[in-house]
Structure formats: C-alpha cells, structure tokens
Amino acid sequence: MAEVPAPERDALVKKYKTDHFSIKNQQSLHARMDSVIKMVFPRTPENGIALYFEGMVGEQGIVEQVIFELFYAQNYNKDSLANKFKYAFAVQMAKYKAPEPGIPFHRTFQMGIGKFKAPREVRKADSSLTDVKQALAFVDTLSIKRLFFNDLGLKEIPQVVYRFPNMEELYLGKNSITEVDLDLSKLPRLSQLHLQGNQITEDKFKISKNKTLKILNLNENLLRNIPAVGSCKQLTTLWLGGNQLSQLTNSSFRRMRRVKDLNFYKGNIVVLPSGIRKMKRLEVLDLYYNKLTTLPKGVMKLRKLTHLAVSNNELKELPDKLHKLKRVHTLYAHHNHLSKLPKSIGKLKEMRILDLGYNWFTDFPKEITAFPHLEELELSANNFLEFPKQLLEIRHLDKLFLRGNPFIEDRPDVTYASQLDNLKSRNIEVFH
Image (cartoon, rainbow, N blue to C red; front, side, top):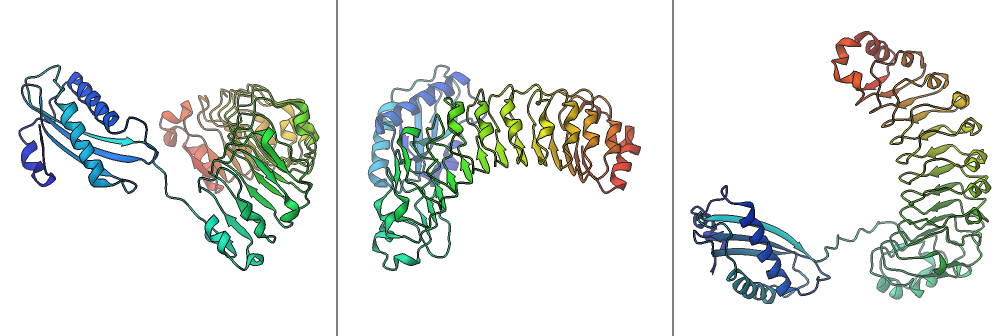
C-alpha cells in the first residue's frame, strides 16, 4: 500500500472503477476504516475532526493506494496526527481483502470523528459582556445591564455575576450547569434569566425571594416537574419546553398565578393535571409535541387565555366547553386526530387564526363559519373529497390553506374554478 499525494490523484484513479463495486466490498472497506479510527482514537475525542479518505483496491482485492486528508484539526498537532493515521492505515489496510475480488475499484469516504462544537453565537448589545474573564477584569461594573455567558462550558453559575448590581438580563444557556442557587437581593434589577440547554433538575433549583424577575427560560434541562418559582413574585413568562415533565401534579401549579406565558413544548406530558386552572392570568399556553389524548377541564378555567397551542398531540376531540375561553383568538391544533369540532366553538367570537391541518376531517366543520373575524384558516392534509362550499360563507378571511386534500389532486383550478375565483375576488390568498 502506498500513500498518494493529492496532486497525483486524478491521473491515478482512472484505472480504478468508481461505478463497479459490490456492497460486500464497500461494507468490508468501511469496517477497515472503523478499525483505523479506533486505532488512532481508542476513545471518542472531545474535539471533533473530519477525515476524507480514498481507497484504491486492485484486482486481487488488496488496497494498493490510499489518499487521506484531515479537516477541522485546529485543536491537534496536525503533523503528529497525520503520522498516526499513516501508521494506522498501513496496519489496518494490510489486513484488508475484498470479499469479491476481480475488478479494481475506488471508494471515497468522508467521516466525522468525535464531537463537533458549533461556533459560539454571541449577541452584540450595548452595556454587555460576553465571557467570565472579561467580567472579572471590567471596572465600571454599574454600567453593565447584560451578561452573555452562554455556551462557555460552565458547570456552575460563576460568582462574578454578583459584581453587576444593575444587570437586567443574564444569559447562561448551553452550558453544563447542574445547580441553581441565586441570591437576587444582590441583583435587584434582574428581569430575565436564561438557563436553557443545561442539566438542571427541580431539586437543584433555588432563587431567593424577589420582585423583579419576569422571564425565566428553563427549556431543555432535566426537569421532571415545575421547579419552585413561587419566590419570583413578578414572574410572567416561564419556558419549560424540552424537559421530561413526567411528574406533574395538581400542586405543581401552586404559587404561579402571575404567569401569563407557559411553555410545555416537547414536555413528554401524557396527562395535564387539572391544577393548571390555578393559573388565572395565563394568556399563552404552549402544549406542542406532547402525548395528550384529552385536555383537562381545568384548562377551561383559564378565562384570560388568548393563545392555545395543542398541535402534535393525540387529541381526538376538543373540549365541549372550549367556548368558555372567550378571549382566545389563536388556536393551533394541527397534527392531531380530530374529525369534528365542539358545536359551541363558534361562540369564540375573537378567533382570528385557526389551524386544523393534518387531522382526520372528512366533512367540513360548519362551526367554522360562525367566527366573524377569522383571518387565517389552515385545513391542509385532511380528507375533504370535494371543495367545502361553506368556505364561501366566511367573510373576513385573508389566508386559506387547502393543500394535501383529496379534492386538490384532480385539477382544482378547473374543477373548482368558480369557487376559487370567488375567494380570490375577495382578496383571499388561497394555498392549494
């Protein structure tokens, strides 16, 4: 086996077929590549590296030539690493024998090894700092309003944050923080705390009593329940998406009466406790991508709700008393198993946006025509066999989505030309 300089590559590979190789030969060569990598890196490296490899196998099924190149190797001594790969290729490719020899062939592989860290994204803003070292050295501490300590590999919240008593926003996302114990008496102006993408559990979360924190972002941690946030007397926004919220109970919702925006996106919730009714001021409830088959009666007690998102669940019906949520103007319920609507849903006179796409409707739900201010209606990917004539009764519609229904497949611009022209003449944007 010989290593080939890249400039000589084109002339060399002409004698090896690139379009004639067996699956068995490819799989066996790939297995040899895995052995090369394991020889160089017995354990998965923390710093990712990309390997480009070309192997040329002769008639006898033996590797005759090798070309390889390393990329993204800034954290390594590249010459030393290249020598390790040369030795590993020499040892491992000498053991290779094509299962089905006879025709020379040439194969190319591109492989990622280890963990690739994306470049750190840092927001640029006035009166802000972006790393711990900078914060330790900074003199005019009273001028700082924001700390962007995201994606720094932190395992705990650094004490340096307390140097900045006028700080209003603290960003600690995408670290490896496991515990939160913040004394907000030392940060009397903090209104936003972002801790998404860490490893925080509810039993390791503590924030002192305060009247300033309004936004708390705990998306994508290791929470099984809602952490104790009752000490945050002015908290209005609580984001808990991307956690495994399998231990919610009625008591989970105590002392959260001021919260207006609650995010349970991808929370692995099978049953939503009725205790949510205690959140009397809730305006936005995001339940996207859970495993709900029903909504509890407690949701109907949230009389200030304006946005309800229950998409990507397993709902077969919406609650009969949904009409009690009189302020709801946006309802996302796509990707469920709905085939009908509650008869009284038309009483939601503020409805502006209704998304019922990707459900099981075969008959048009006539209740939709009762919404006097409906602006956007999504009905894509249901099972309407014909154009729903009742759509022509909706007065103030701006956008209508009908893609993926059976009647669309048969030349709708011809078959339903008059209906579509009627909608378009009223400046309704139709997507079909």
